[in-house]
Length: 83
Image (cartoon, rainbow, N blue to C red; front, side):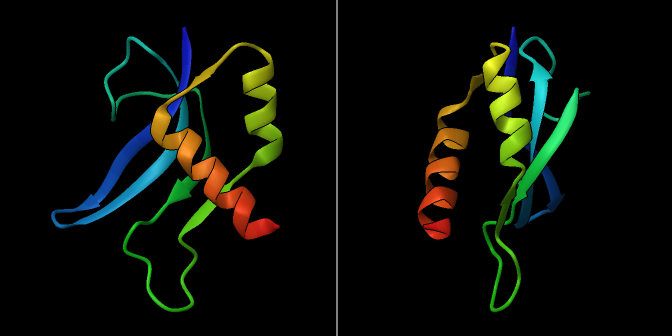
């Protein structure tokens, strides 16, 4: 099964997450199929906190990928900012 989830990066106490498409059996920060965005929870000022390639997201959901609850929340958050 293919899932769309967060993969953690960054340093200790400075998290940075990539939004990736990966096989469910692969560990969180392991190999992935495609990177479709990022989330920076500690972005300040003019820094971009969230970017999602909505065309790639809709493609992967269309072919059967499941999104994690956190990614669902972030997609809704990005949709509200765009509107």
